[in-house]
Length: 172
Length: 210
Image (cartoon, rainbow over all chains, first blue to last red; front, side, top):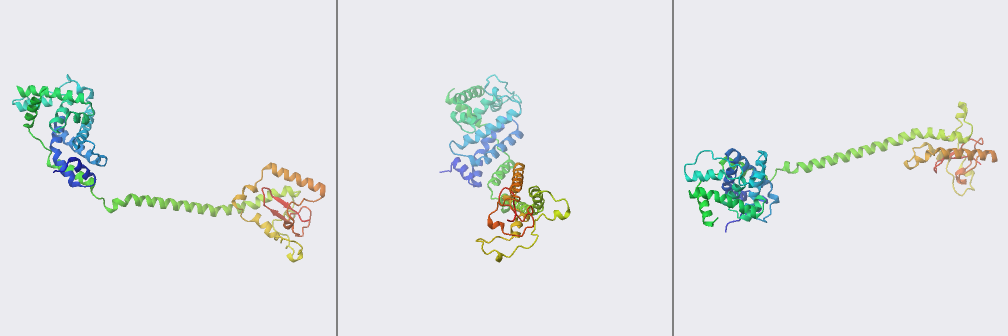
């Protein structure tokens, strides 16, 4: 039976660096793609990715396995992204706005996967975040709500809007 | 929204490119993680406690040194000031201030002649301390609690002067407030000469021989 994330994090908090390496290996890919598709440029994504892990490392002493490690880690990621958006002057109130300005894809999509990637990039930030937390981190609706500091209804609504838009692309 | 459609979107999403962080980024994160839990070196571990201990020792040392300096300086200053104070306070109560140097020497802060031997007064129950012993406290460094007593308020001083004047006018001599043992005969030569100065109370007492 493999060691759980929570056990690994507790072991790391006690000074076991190898436990962190295992933990990092499990989560580095999903977290990196979550950040990359939220920040949209690799340079910013790398910076944010590193800062998120540094925050997790610094918070190891305060970690308590009251929730899944994944929820805890993506809560840190969400907070760091919010700071990033604030620094860029993006209003958080627009995150839930269905009609918020949607970024246009960088190039016209040719294939279905390109269209899907473009559609994800064009989602409002809150919907994109909910979708990525679902598909990359594997979080449930309540866990998405916990990670983003919102209620379950809002999280469910964001996820539904995101899925509806992306399904249109996939079904074409 | 159907679960099946959601599943289709998720499957298609997983066909997208699976980006991963660069090896350099992995090294940075893992290096930070290792450094955070690495045991600290001896110097780093003890730097803070040793610094605190050094500061504490230094503070205590400076405090003790300052206290020692103050204790050493205080008796010297008070020893210099006491005779001047005594002279100022005694002169008005004893009568007219001496005007000539010869008279000024009459003010007795030291015995003018040796005290009579103790054997000459065998009937006394308690041995009277020598006159020099009574005067010595006024000349010696004054202990801290008596410092305030040597500076009586002006009203007390005036009252003492009035009482002395009344006594002189009534009896022709100064009243003896000191106990018999303290007023051992010292062979005073005049009614206003002072043989003993005691500092037993808040006021300076002038004691004349019987």
